Image 1: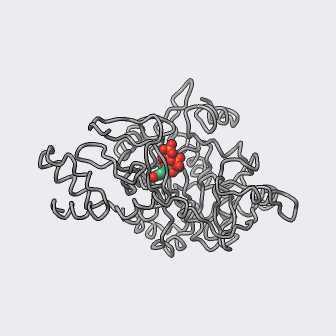
Image 2: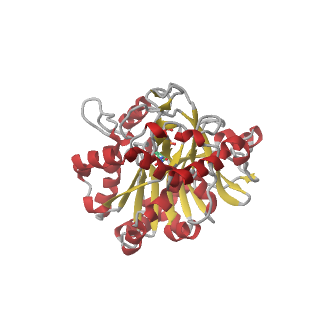
Image 3: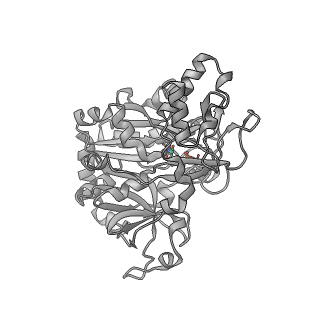
Length: 408
Ligand code: UTP
């Protein structure tokens, strides 16, 4: 893109300030900035001015969950179906590791965080170890697709390579990078992270399937005969991946997607809960749950919206391919964005200073025709690490790991 075209594009979106330092840059940096301007979707930025409208939901009604007693009663049957599918190579896993982990506050990718006390125990190591349990019991490797972002790709690949993938078969690990989106201040003006570079952040975890296709990995999925993808977050160290019983139950119920859920520990717990929205599966965020919905009861007298998602979904690949061109809603999220201040000095803010623009994997549930919410025991499968201390932290995850017999 040449300078005139860049000026025209920026003027269309009210972002002319992006070229504020252009004349100070050497030609190589000028050219990089022009390329970045060309590649950036600026049409989404205006949405920060109507965030409330973006969050509007349809009519919410309950969605029944497969609860622990029912799972227990059919566990052998489901396990057999799931193990067979895994052994036949029909199940792949997708690790979402493109996030910035800003709340944890480490500059390294979150998976590199060492949560050991008397020995090294990295988050990546816990996750790969959990997947290895299934590989060992079933006797077949599971293809693991790892999504990173421009911000953490090199560090992630370097680390896992140095650690020899914690014993996982290298031939079954595939990296791919997600897209980036510009970040703005509260007025929707793009922030600069360098004089010749707009501030960007990963565009949320909802673009994982499109990014996987762009990386050419759909061919691998087809050629390897993978029919289901188990998508999961990097930060839950008790995560069960390619869990045969979960796989078998989702297959037996012929659902487009299965979602692992935990029973809420209080009506106002801050988790997204499973529901139907306008008759289709969906997830309603805790801040969207009205008092009325929070206290609603089902026919058994139990809370009607009682199961929270833990970011562990099993998608049927043909269903993903069917919806791949469909739009996902945009989320405009307040975050801390390192950037240049008005004097051109680089600052790392202590509190949120602007917006990031994200698509979320939870919105993909609403694109699916049917969903099986599948209850798991919180204490055995849910130890998220979001913060350094307090709720959902390194401390709470360590306690849960120890409870599950993991030596730290
Ligand atoms: P979070 O919502 O916890 O976001 O991600 P985050 O960026 O990791 O952390 P904070 O909010 O900055 O502290 C949930 C999961 O989705 C992945 C994360 O890596 C994590 O596994 N994710 C998130 C992506 O892969 N890409 C993204 O753009 C955002």
